[in-house]
Image (cartoon, rainbow, N blue to C red):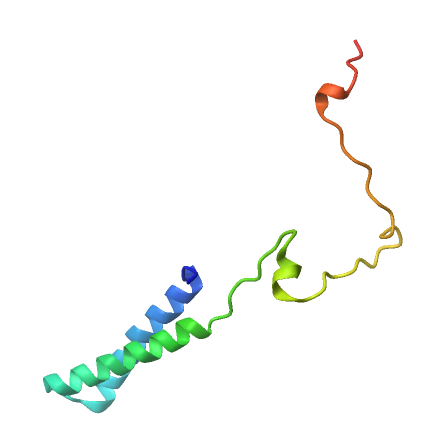
Length: 96
């Protein structure tokens, strides 16, 4: 299972805190059972929000193959040209 992203942690935590406070204020409960039920509901809601935050898309060479989508095509006029291979700096002659 992948690690949660910072956005997932932030949205989930904020949801738990805000929903717990709101439900406690709206219900005006003071019993231990009522607080436990509200806390459990807030945790479930926070987990739901954290899991529904969109995952960042992977970038890189193998990203298109993993998602099953085709790689985007370039629209530049020279898009059909293949770039020239680069050479290592040691292969360049030194001119003094």
